[in-house]
Length: 249
Image 1: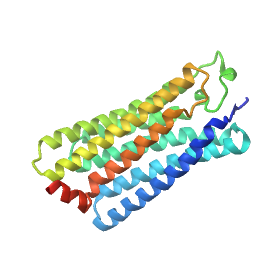
Image 2 (image 1 turned 180 degrees about the vertical axis):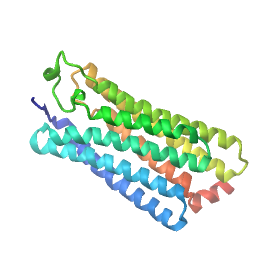
Image 3 (image 1 turned 180 degrees about the horizontal axis):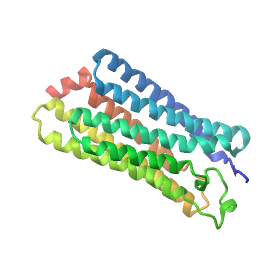
């Protein structure tokens, strides 16, 4: 079995990922500090979400590093990509737990969510995904890459839409301006993640429908939305003094 060759136009995303890792590490440290200060569950759950997303970024970067060093997407890449997707699935679960903690909604959906997440995680590591394998090597054979990728996205969308609905309902039930702002920021963070995955849908369609090698401009835009997610959800929980003062005005 041969390997998909590395394309030089993908190189900038490697350095982009390194910058994103540094940003996510800073956000993770800030959230862990907030948890240590407050000693409550919600910042702990959010810290775990940040850690898992950082690990996903690291996995993607390590896979790209191998491709840069060897000139091909090889064994490490074939593990790092589904591993990154699995980290996102687990992050979604903890994000749901975080939202349930602060809105007291969604307990009944928790067990089905975990079961579905486990099933998708197993599917991601099946050989018929052909991660890093040139299309000509599996012509005429089953290929589930598009479906497994879309399953991760649909799974995440279920979580984000659930949380968005929780936020809207909870916002209607409170008169507290600070709580309303926090719920609005949490809602915006979910919208950011919906846009994040939408960009990956476009990138996957490029790979599937054309001869594009992937890592298109859509990937860069996607991670901009991920940065917005970090910022919005951090502010929704932490509520720094300057934001509280602005709300009071």
